[in-house]
Length: 111
Length: 136
Image (cartoon, rainbow over all chains, first blue to last red; front, side, top):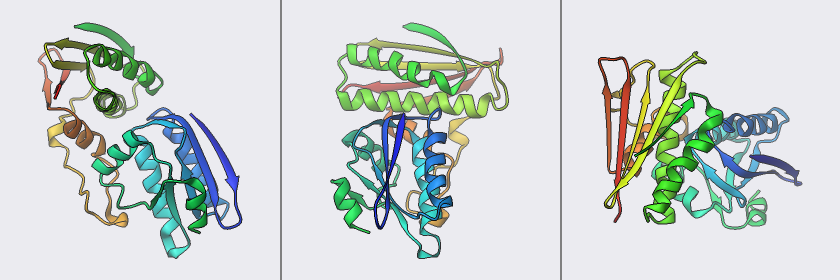
């Protein structure tokens, strides 16, 4: 798994590449926490190059969403979610907890 | 049935997914089913590593997988704490963000993605988790 962070004027985009499972989810959680710790609460998670995500990744997203939405200071949105991952998120009832965008720049424009 | 043993560590989840993925793909499951079989197996193995072998670094995970007619069977055996998936409460998928529980999601996905999930603690201290999925 590979994570890159890109700063925009009104939000940060965290691009996640590869596979997120119990082994790699802590890195994703750390990246999201680091953004929150740096005062960034408006976050786009770009999943364009994500191949796989287990519930360990879902939990990292949920924790970040809770922290980001606190005091209405921001939110985590998802962009370019691959079909298989979207289906699993849907099954887990997570699609109601995150706004999703087909295009990462459309997600950036949301903020 | 093909069998393989893994040290019960998260770093082997990639290989665990590859092992069942290859058999499912060879058995003619669709890409979507292969992904879901890999996800269910990952969730099962992750639960064993995290809960059955909590705080233990010498755990062993035995994984067997095979096709019979249009059915894939996946068996995971561990020698850790017994951990019956059916006793874990299902997550409330309608709960608000603040009430959303973190646990139970893996087991929920296993049950949703596979046709059958059975768990049996054996007298020899092993725990046998069997998951079955049929081609549609």
